Length: 189
Image (cartoon, rainbow, N blue to C red; front, side, top):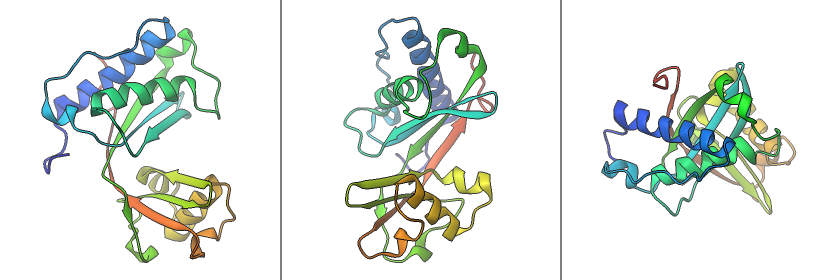
């Protein structure tokens, strides 16, 4: 990501790629997006695609270590959020008109030494201990009004760990930030 981040046009393009890819998936068409000319859309960055339906979470899948350009990662995560999030049944064709999309383009993970390095509202948390892994995006803590401790506890819960597992030296904690945008800001055309 460049210092200036994504332009409004870049955000519109990525949201359009996500929505178009989901629509093609639901019609059982090929979901490979067209190549993009903007350099920032061709960089490799972690990303999440979040689907809301009637104001409720309906799917959210992402990755931290992409191996392809951002625009392709967005398409891949859109398909996964629509069809592979184990918390929800796959979207159906009739769902397309009632969903809204949000995209989070991530900074690289940064291992922290002290939990005081985590700033609620700016940082997301990724933690791991053994085979357990959990992640919560920066906007989750803000949406629920959590403090740092609650944010850490909820991330542990998501990883299937006890709420206080973040205190253990066996737990590795990372922070990251995200450029977050959605279809409310940039409605589909």
